[in-house]
Image (cartoon, rainbow, N blue to C red; front, side, top):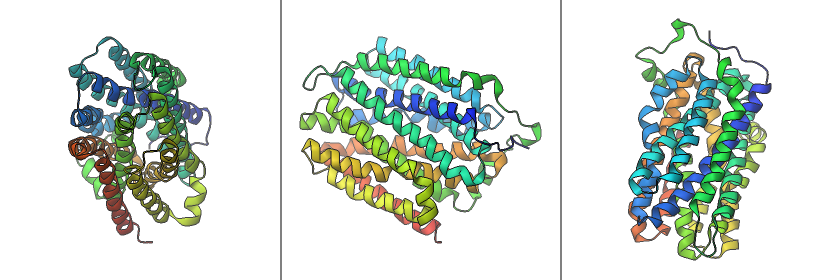
Length: 389
């Protein structure tokens, strides 16, 4: 059988630290890539394509990577993901061209996916069932810490006054974060738990995972939730430039969103126990829907920060709740694969939605946030149908 579930211990803290460092680094790099793309002559449509490139390679390889992780390599995946992100960010400092952005972003996405697969699989396999919401809530809590720390300090370091941005100053900070990510889990590298050959993935495993009742609905909701966060990460810098905000102010807005998401994740287990998964997912999607519409109309910085704080609180529910949903309904022997397919759905949303958002942004950046509202409406419909209880 696969690794027995163990009580929470040092391994969980290391996974959480890695999540914080990795997410902080990625959330420094991605807004900076928007600035660099614009400085290199990209319009809104091309910015959307560059942003979606982050998820392209992971979309193609996530299932293969999930099978690989399922053979007891969760700790190895954490280290590899951290090192890949580090090397790619170094490349971004020394190669400033649009073609290189289309190479670097998929590679960064692969590094990010390796780290996410390793951490989520380790938590899914080593956590007791009653602790799923708590442990996945902690994982995404630490991710939200990274989402707040990265953009805020990255924005401050890059700010050169007005709308001028020193992208490389922020990228060096991201490199420091990725070094921290690698060092935090290096002790897990030789201590991964192996599985017997009999537990390896057979040719029909993907179909078996997809056939689980409620699984397709769970991954659609997860993908919708991820796409909303992704589009805001890519297009808030563009909106900020349009409104005359500097990189520090955009960093503050992104940090506010992350801190609000972090707040709900601290209490996710308790509110899930009280209200149920269906209710909390739908409530989060509904508030996100109205918040996205409001962002399209608000131009005052402080009012925008308030709207993003409320919306960010609601946005924080989707990811940890769907992680628990997928883990609970999946076969333990195929859990890494189930998580990788879920992440594939996330990546599909991260490829399609930013690309579509970029194409419709020619009608005005507000249309991007109407697209997010429509996506949340679809998420509510799917959740209501799948979780009738």
